Image (cartoon, rainbow, N blue to C red; front, side, top):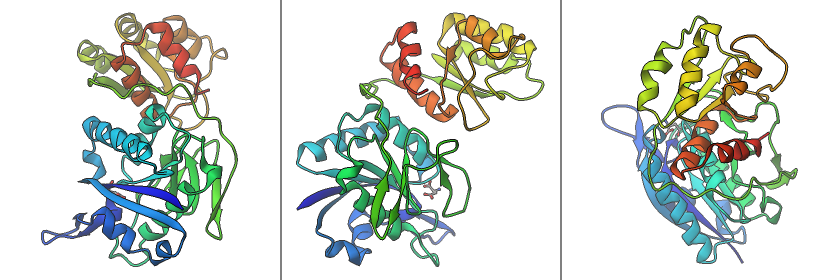
Amino acid sequence: MTRISVLAMGGTIAMAPVATGGVAPALDAESLVAAIPELAGSGVEITARTLRSLPSPSVGFDDLKALHAAIAAELADGADGVVVTHGTDTLEESAFLLDATVDTPAPVVVTGAMRHPTAAGADGPANLLAAVRTAADTAARDLGVLVVLNDEVHAARHVVKAHTTSPAAFVSPGTGPLGLLVEGAPALRRLAPVRPALPIPANTPRIGLFTISLGDDGEVLRLAAPALDGAVLAAVGGGHVPAAMVPAVAEAAARIPVVLTSRAGAGPVLTGTYGYPGSEIDLLARGVHHGAALHPLKARLLLHLLVADGAAREQVGAVFARYR
Ligand code: ASP
């Protein structure tokens, strides 16, 4: 019998009303599983464990370290796949960090809910059922970490939360989902996982994330840079900053790794189209790393892993190049 381990981290999927108003994490992993009668006769053996009961804005690197260890322990203990339930606000970040660090061909699927369990049309049970079915399917092996919500299967590498309330909030801009669940079964296209996996960090470097906007003169970056171990620029368009910002970027890049991504939200950073001050050609020539096609939030996590691991400059560039 296929065995799937469900690890609960909290989030709306596990929330209940509180006396002070609104909802907050309350339900454990067993209750989430017990709410899905279909699981009982599905031929899948489920084990459920509550690791955290957190709203996802408060999930931190230590929590992800514990989650990483729990996933490894479940797989070592014979689980065929793992499902993580997690708040949706930072789900794309946790899923990406796991994708970059969990070294297994077994399916690891992250899910959550946009509507809490007592709301009409709560999507948690359907999402958890779809996640378990995906994790139990051999077609989901060796695809990297997957994110399943709204009957869609996304690669952690591509997915973002793009709406604050819609049950269809999770999308993969520029690539689309890897597949859909149809009549309860995942139909997936292949995606080679990014390997080798990186070590889970033992320390917590400080990586700044700067969204560049019209009129930015670089002063915020210049003031922050001395306190940073690395920086990610969510630059405009194909990877550009205002000319006035170039000296601050160059100064920072001489001291710490600086990675160029785009705030546009889809598509790769350019390499050889624009040649003006502040363009991608200019910034890359000044030692800024190319952020490939990674979303700025994911680039920040990848740089976090690399800096924590003491990666040399060339290694930073080589690892980011895997995400083209
Ligand atoms: N604020 C909630 C959280 O991220 C939202 C959710 O889970 O959908 O924990």
